[in-house]
Length: 506
Image 1 (cartoon, helix red, strand yellow):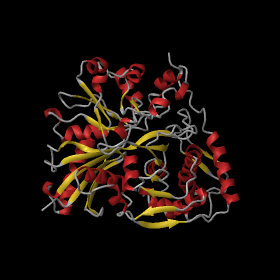
Image 2 (cartoon, rainbow, N blue to C red):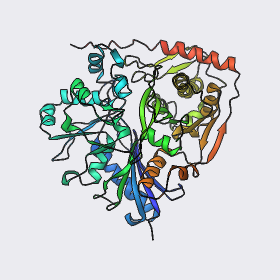
Image 3 (tube, one colour):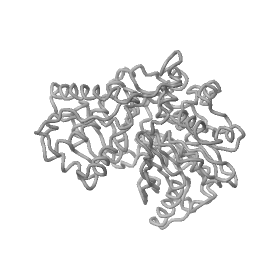
Image 4 (cartoon, rainbow, N blue to C red):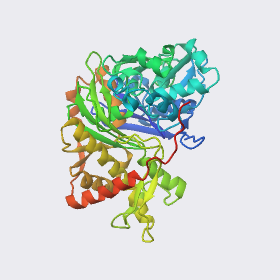
């Protein structure tokens, strides 16, 4: 009897989840666990990579138990991960040499200033990588570790250390670790390092030299849907690892955005809007980035334009954990619904600077438009609206870059249960916002890619048949009102600029 399920390990910024899907793309079992967020100083965000590995092993075991399944019931494992988060570990002991530096972390801003001081400025690597020079990407985080952890550069040059994003770290552990684990990554994660050539899909020697990265550190780059190795450790021993994708590319895949012009927006810790541009790597002139969307084994890659927003769902967590205005994230909609509008209040959550389309590392958060009239409901509404406003900025940039106006937006992620937010998003964009039946599209995309590599599904056209619409929000707001609200938002964004004096490179 053939295996019944495909497993997806979804390692995110705040938690790790394992989901089992059946051949129809339906969720059969799901288990998740949160992990610690470490903030050593302002602008720094870290994770304990060993805790992430422990949580991953834990959720896999418990998802299997929940389904009453064993490894023999699973055809393949797909892995999807928080992107750009950087881990460096000893290849002989398996010990990380420091905490993982998370994608939101801004400590490499001085390195970025140094690199951007050369001719070409912040965009000098964009033609090769599709990316601006920014602390967001893995390459400058890795450089920081090599420069600041005692002995790291010497050990790296001697081949004693390994670098990886979280996918690489987990695959290495699952396939045996120090006993011969596979040191690999996929094209989507590699395209987020500032070190990979978008056309050759290989590490770029010139960029490695320029940024200061020894090549022995780096993993082998593979297609997103391919056999990476066999699980040798844990409850899935014997199951092939058949996919790896950055979380936002996986969500795009799970939303079956396989045709040029199709787009999705994921509402999670941050927001990430991706539009498929087909086999053409479209350069952005309006503050977006060009990234690999996915690559099937033996096929040409599909590229995407992406708008990355650092803080959206994390702002709701901040409202809960730092201010105590709510006790649970679901309460923000209830509180926001106590008022009819934002009361003139705008909240720009530039906690780690601003990402697309501004790319301002020195920006910091502001609450603008406060009067004595504003109360907690207005603050809650401003928190939700900040997500929609930031997404509007990205959509406007994407329409300009692609030349193809967005006609509808597929949405997924934890925040899409918030109907107040989804309606406001439709109003602000002026296009329908569509939520699928399965909103765990990140895990679903990893499962789909793994199932394609192992023959569970014959091809991507079969995957389209599994996608189903759950809810659609249509715009209701008059255009004049929409544009007036957006005008005030842009004024608030300008107030965040140049708040931090970035140290100049020596």
